[in-house]
Image (cartoon, rainbow, N blue to C red; front, side):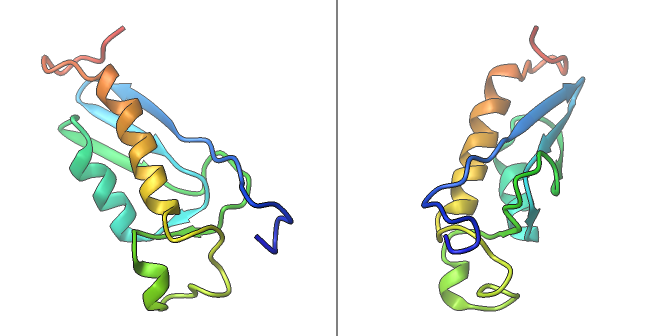
Length: 108
């Protein structure tokens, strides 16, 4: 990536559970579809997806295929490959599943 001078950028994804509510923090600003994808895959009844968390300047992320269509600042404000959004959704889902307890309480 031109902006960072590297081929890859480490990105931190965090999840925090509070009863039936989960918080997912992602770096940079995700487009709406990214938050929707995380919520759809979350086992929690309520999931809030928070962008601009965890630093490292990923800028905007998008869902699979969006970069190829162009659109909202896809060339000037977006860092990463077409798969970046899908990778972050997958990471969030892998973190959410093991801490969910169907009783509505996070696992310890």
